[in-house]
Figure (cartoon, rainbow, N blue to C red):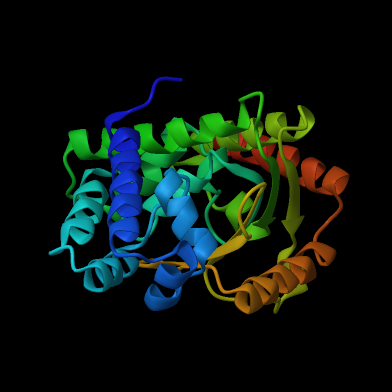
Length: 277
């Protein structure tokens, strides 16, 4: 796959960071300690594997006395990203993750959305947006989903709350198509999907969605998101807590077989509803 301009800019960011760090006489560990990340993360930044968040870039500028060049570069790339500022780094990590585990309380996760479902979600959140804006968001979401079709796709686990299965986002026809797509991913073993029944009541992740990511060459991360913000978590203790919460969710779900039956049944219900309207 050809590299895009953003990839090349991140590579430049990493090369410049290494150059300025070495000119300052600091090791990766020493710089990491001063900007509150590990030396390993500085190495990943320099290789262009990880993208620093804005506050880290600002601290790097302060330590290396670079006049704000790293902050300006990160801001430029965030502004060009089709994703929300708090999500752009998470989207970048999809392509290097070896395992992704998600919990969706109300909406089907982006990696399993169809184009029409993504359009409905985008328009609902941005009712006055231009068609160009909507298409950009839909394309970005469907492009992300391609990671599940590649030869090096991650191991993908998804826990869907029953509400996310039953709510007819985009109308019953769109919802039926989306559930058919999810069922296909499950049957092709591209995703392991389970459903958390409404009857479970209170559960371990009561607010927002949760995503866990694992990698070959870097520590695992967790990402939580609510309606208007998201947080990428690197702290090992916090990530461990998030992993435990996800484990508790999984033991409360239906089996994969029962979940697939429920998803396919719900698809038929949505389809019948669409045929009568």
